[in-house]
Image (cartoon, rainbow, N blue to C red; front, top):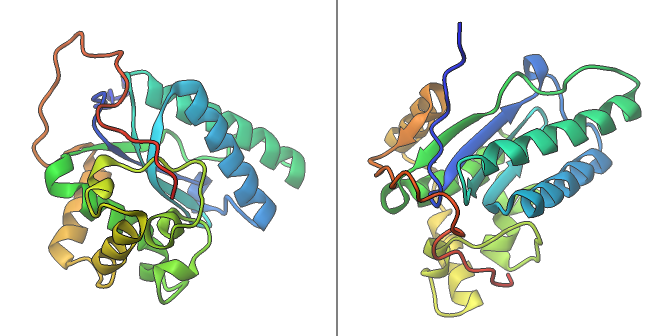
Length: 223
């Protein structure tokens, strides 16, 4: 059976998930998380991809990225998977791929669901019972958004920038947004989109030739 083509729309954010083989651990030590993030940094640069939000769990990864072209996302994910598998197999004396098949991705309707998806990603460790608050988890973008901790792989999305005129205002705004758990209908909507793919919310398909410009409105601001 032919594999279903992923929906990838340049200039719109995408929620991406990749799991370990049979949900086995991807990360065992701080060095593993650090190497993975280094692979992400290299892939982002190579594919000209903007990463806005992420969390590294023990056996899976969530991120929100904006691809500049239809091919950029697949290029970046392939590069990350290849580099991390080589590292992991050498470190732990094993062989084979480390990820459970192809990654999953969902196009996000920015105005309606971006904040929801960002909260969904960064609150993952809280829902999993690993920590009681998102700022207590080291391996995510929450510290950059909520507390101004420098994170060189994070590109602030324009909607995050709109939370305030200054860094402190944006950080306070994001902390307020993340104070409460996501309502169950929002959780269900994100999980449904993750499971079935496609789009979360109404998204408009771009013109066929709108494939090569940089992500519209993305700002490379310091935390």
